[in-house]
Image 1 (spheres, rainbow, N blue to C red):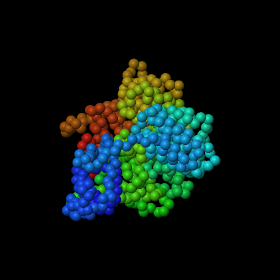
Image 2: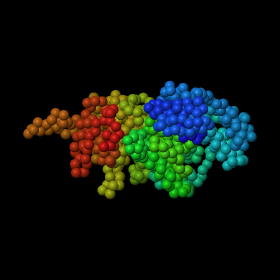
Image 3: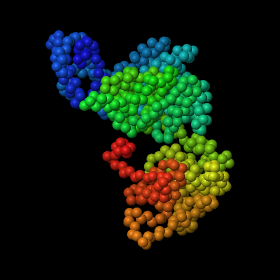
Image 4: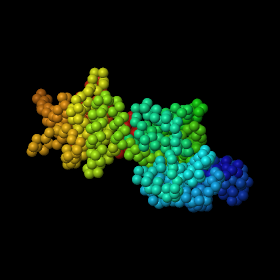
Length: 614
């Protein structure tokens, strides 16, 4: 404030109410001194630190703020008195759109601006209310910028076609499944009689095909469409989000796109971090109040590093983890047109020209509208990656004869059974189709024996079919209660796929979940695996450590072993007292302590990431 008063500059303080209250009240006192001097028209004034400062009356102070959501303060009264508040109204967007279209050389700017405006108005009213939707000015401006670029790039297309194509391509990427058909019908009603072809990128698509092969992935058209949408978004935005549930293919999407763009002559690499695992000071840096020493945070260090890359190399800073108000609000100045990171020690680091900032969250429920509007959004729905490409990619690593048998088995029943479980039964935990598929493949991988050289052995068709039934019931049925498991069994037994199910004796209460497949390919009851409990005669065991083997814990132990021997993670869910901890500790106890060390951690609401990392 002292500097502004001396130089006669105008200062604009953006997002002013995000400062903490103690700092705000100090700022209010300083502003009051400077403005009082201006009112009295004195040539000099005494500032808070005792300096006598000369005054240039031309100076002005402006504050901008978004009132009323997380991480925002109410301004103190002594600050409010010094300013005149002006409420900003939503501008008439139609005029803005028309002026921008005219400046890009669109002849029919009046008609097109009206259509553009009406489409966005209808979208706001009729589409479902998702947190990550934004049909505001920032989105409108990025669409208009793209329209200008497309018009210059393809001057032979009609103006209506250009506007329709850009509106479609730039908004389809962020829509959830149920809104897509509605949006398409709205846009077709507004631009009747225009048939759009899809914008093609033959060079990029060729590179994507090649990279999919290299990664061992399937070329799955809906997923490749998401890659193209991500590519289009990154051309017009410097900050964007690949949004969607775990297992939707977000990370692979980013990796394949970067490799493909490197192949077509634009080298790309990424720097990845998880902002949620650290505190905000660890991310942006801390200023020691006593010594005034500055310690850079992880993000600010990576940000400085992006300035040191070779010319022509593009860097993507990937923030992979849940979006949280505590840190994402600090990136507002990075994501808008300022493109500057401001740190607590007064450093202002501009964004490197070849840098992009990418978020990879599951949802944006905690983000403010300010954050959502600053980012390009690509929504990766879980329906993009269904069971088909995941299983095909896994079967490519199997012997051909085995993969054909397994593919026929999966195709015959998995889709129907999954829909039945999803619609008619109540799993104990909400998981996606890809999680069920992954669990089934992990079980198959553990069950199919491998030779000494690590290649899978060829098994007879009947044996494979039984192993598949076992994997199916412990993937789709693993999260079900007993009565739902019985319903699922009835469904599978009645299904036309006619799988080789375990034979049940009449009058017994057994279900197929009481059986497993032995090494010779026969169904055996779990009873046969339960060893008798031998009580130690020479010492009295501690009560809490006694585990009497029964069908349940032998079965859980076996399933855990199938997954753990592949070095994959296991999650046991169940109510208190269902022996989860005892089973895990019992299983861990079998390990050789020379090879594997075990550590148990108790989590509670007070657990901080730092206590866990120590």
